[in-house]
Structure formats: structure tokens, C-alpha cells
Length: 65
Image 1 (cartoon, helix red, strand yellow):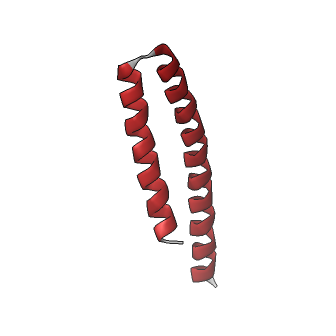
Image 2 (tube, helix red, strand yellow):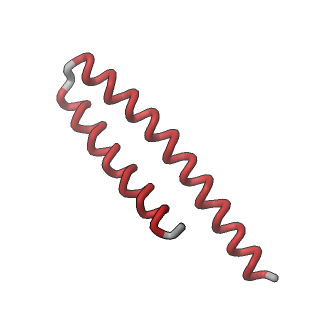
């Protein structure tokens, strides 16, 4: 029974992490939009880099699904 509980907890934690990444993705997209409107190249690069990192994290989560 304990292995089943561990698996369920792991899945719950992964779902919570995915939800947090989705929220972060939304925030970073809004930041990128603002930076583009301000024509702030430094912030644009930062946002694009973080968006790429978030995408890789999400892809790694889905690889185990």
C-alpha cells in the first residue's frame, strides 16, 4: 500500500509544479509583452530566456507522463 501512496503523492506534486509553471509562463508572457511595448531589449532577452527555461521544464514533466 505504501508504494501506491508514494506514487499518488508524486503525481500530485508534479501536477502542482506544472500549475506553478503555467502561472509563471503567463506572467513571463505578460512581462515580454510589456518589454516589447517599451522596446526594452534587455528585458525582452530576459523574458525570452525564462520562457525557454519554462518550456524545457514543462516538456520534461510531460516526458514522464
